[in-house]
Length: 505
Image (cartoon, rainbow, N blue to C red; front, side, top):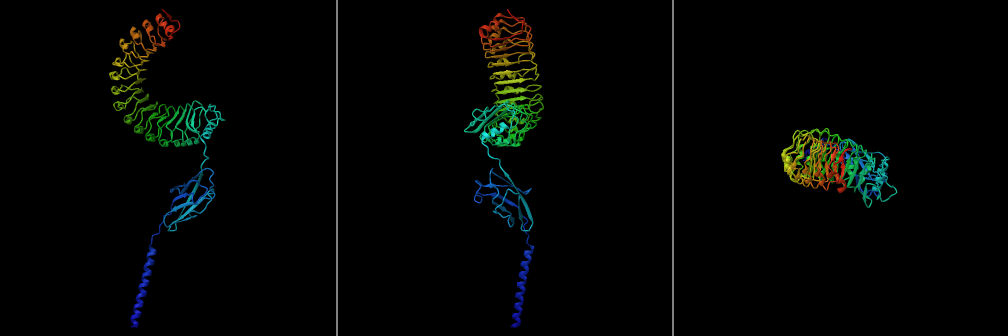
């Protein structure tokens, strides 16, 4: 019995030793975590009596930098941060331990495997919040050569040129030709401003803070020296009108395509070499103005802008027309200044067109389809190579303005009598040797320009145009004009521009 008892005791002892040994081996084989990140770092009002709102820091995990911004005048010498870290890790200093953040502080996170990671805290104190009036005072002082002549003692801003406000909150700033060269960053704090127009100035750059003007609906930076537009311009989600014409822009950021509320876009007269294809996503655009001496191509994505009413191209190097006008049937105004070899016949599909200007193209003819534009009111064909009026034009009975200046037209057709609604007829700089007497059928004419032709006489019937206000006859071969024409001066107070030495007959 004793030997059996001893045997059992020995077996029990061996089993216990085996169990402990097994547990010890499991502990030795455990993989310890190496995670040691600060996940959140913020300051709560419940822990910090000198804060009026919770403040959350930004954590750059690559650079191991914690960035936190405090309002102006915040006492940062006694603050308690609330910190979240990786599981099973430790941090020093501890969470909610009071610290003086006016000094540089490092936080060390120790992982379960005893490895460490340091984080640096970078603190920024925001500038003092200025009133809108103080912001405009800063703007005024930042431009010592300005010619605004504001009365700085006016506490209401009511007398300040170009400024509109509601109860001290600025809603509009429109300044034209007043020697403005600088826009201070504080301008980005004008939270109520809806329209900003700085025209004919010397601005060379825009502060990044301009993207904070999220209430803007109209932005006009015209005839300055701006070289770039912030890529974050798509922050201005309420923007409807953007005019950045006549600057020194070399590129337009593709983010412009994100301005989905944009209705009007003017980007002509810069140093652009290309137009971003993204403008084709501006589905609400009704007005588009493009221009530039270095642009030879236009993106076909413009075909997507089916709401366009007004299209202006001033592209002297554009030799082919990439746009399918059949897609843009809402167009009412088209102005083209290009060097097209031929003009697209699709112009005839624009039944809503009321104004058409095709200038500086050296074209000798236009498609007859122009005669289908029954709603056309204004037609300008200046600076081409026409020898006569385009075929089909005599169907455009609604015309009130017809300008065919600087061509090679040698005769005015008798069918001109169909233009009974015409108020302005301009034929300056052609080869005209005569004017049909039927011109008096244009009873609504207020302006008639026949300058710089080869006229040796003009019909007396011009004297029947009782509404004529201006008659231009200079630089012809006239020696006399009919007395009935001269009488327009006294009868209708008409102003007649004529070379010296020409007499009434």
